[in-house]
Length: 111
Image (cartoon, rainbow, N blue to C red; front, side, top):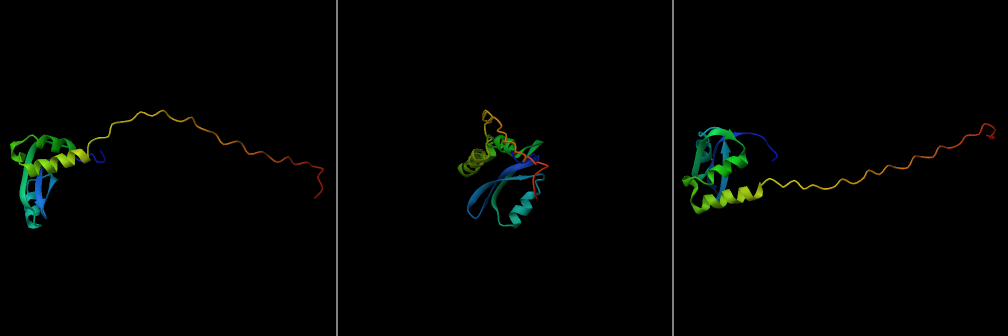
């Protein structure tokens, strides 16, 4: 995961007809979302701060988010942001560049 920020408030809102997941540190975020035209805002305050991914996993099971639109937004987020499995690849052997040949300088060379 690219970020290690922790959030307390997780949920979904509809903006321009599209549901998306939302994160915040205060439930007062509802006022800001409503002011900017968001509809059907559902946010919950979790007990402990958590990462975005873990918080969204937690709300996926809550009854407040049981409707199809919220579940679709949650599933889309979890699918896109799922941690990538670490692939173990053998490292290629380091190849050293050949040493540059030094020019031999003869003292009796005419200049």
